[in-house]
Every structure is written in C-alpha cells, then in structure tokens.
Image (cartoon, rainbow, N blue to C red; front, side, top):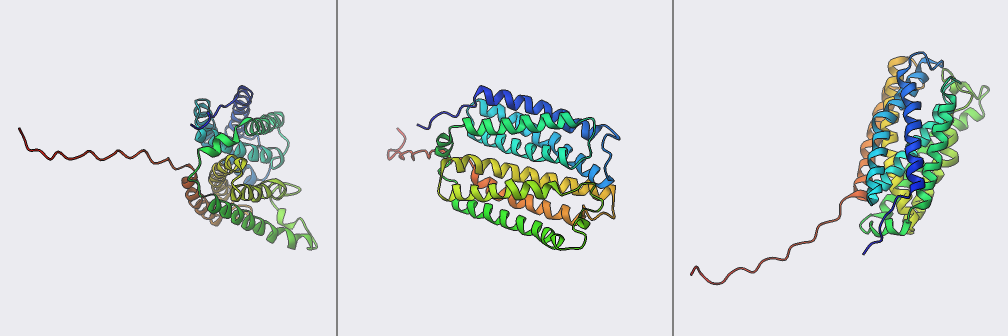
Length: 286
C-alpha cells in the first residue's frame, strides 16, 4: 500500500502567509490607480501579471493546499506549481517595477513564497509521490522539459548576444523602464537550468524528479496564461511598443495549449479496477 502523503504544518503555515502577502501585492498592483510609475506598457504588464496571480494562481494554491492537507498528491504538486509561479512573478514585481509604496509588500510576498516553496518540497516524501506515478511517461516529459529550456534560452540569446556587441547594448530595453531585463536574469540563472535538471531527474526516474516535474508543468501552464495576458494588456496600453505584441499573445496561447498535453499525461487518473464478468445462467426460467 502506498505511503500517505502529508503536508506538514510548517509548510501549510508558510503557504497561508504567502497567500495573504501575494493577495495584498497583486490586489493593490492591479486595483490601485497611479501606484505604478513606469512606462505605460510595463505598468499594464504588471497589472496583467497581478490579474493572473489573483484569478488563477492564488485560487489554485488555496484549493490545492486544501487537497494536499487531505493526502492528495495531485493537490501537493499543484500547490508547488502555484508557489513556483508566484515566486517567479514576485521577483518581477520587485525588479520590473519602479520603487513604490508596495516595495516591502513585494519583499514579503517573495520571501514567504520562496520559503513556502522550499519547505514544501523539502518536507515532501518524494518516494511516496513517485509511487503514485507509475504511468507517467517520464522520458517523454523529460524531452519536453529539455526542448522548452533549449528553445527558451535560444530566444533570449537571440537578443542578448547581438546586444552584447552592439554600440548601445541597452537599446533593446528602450521603453521598458528597467536597467536590465529581470526575465533574462532569472530564466538564465535558475528557471531554465532548473527545467533541464528536472528533465535529467525524470529520465533517470529519481523520486525528486516526479515532485519537481509535476510542479514545473503546473507552473508552466499558469506562466503561459500570465504572459499571454500581460502581452495583451501591454499592447492595449501602448500599441506602438516593442515590449508587447499581439503575436506574443498568440504565441503564448499556443504554448499554453501545448503545455496541457504533458500536464494531462502526468496527472491523468489511474484506471479503475475492472469488474469480473458475471457468468451467464444456463438454466431457463423455472
């Protein structure tokens, strides 16, 4: 019989605190007018990100944490994925928006979310999760992770490498209101190497790979929705910008639809037991 999955109290408490901090950070960013003082496009993108945090990531985190507290391994991995999404975008609220009265709220949200994510992963019984995933096509999902990491890195390097040798290396940041691109920073230093490592762990069927892999798939789907949303609101706020486009919306809608495929195969329900056929009566009516 598989071992029980238990979400510990330290993790549950940190998740609750992170949910409150993220609700305050995202809610004020989205609803309070004139709070953001950056360019119109980046202000709109921050509000788009905050909308997805409020409408998708936080409800998913709350429901999945409740399910995880009742022993659901799927709930646990959805909670991890939601925390990963919130941590990624808390970083952007801190470094892609000009200093504003929410700075300490952003700091609290990022800190609590990071510690909640690390504690949840660290206190999870990885082997117990892996026992519940015998039908996961680990090698297919590993290849998917490597392809995503490679293509994403290639897209960023297409901008970074030419800018490195250009007379004005910061020209690609025009109208962004930032000194460097925080998406490049965290993707290339952590998230894309992390995706490649998840691929290795899944390929070799390490227990930790199942925990990180399931969470990463959830994170990837919500992130695709988030980028499509911030691209859409950015183009509305500044139709002439180079920082957002309708093509970007279409691209990340497609990315989200593709992400549903490995997500389905990872979390698909186990087939129920087949009922034994009943023997037919060979006698007629009395």
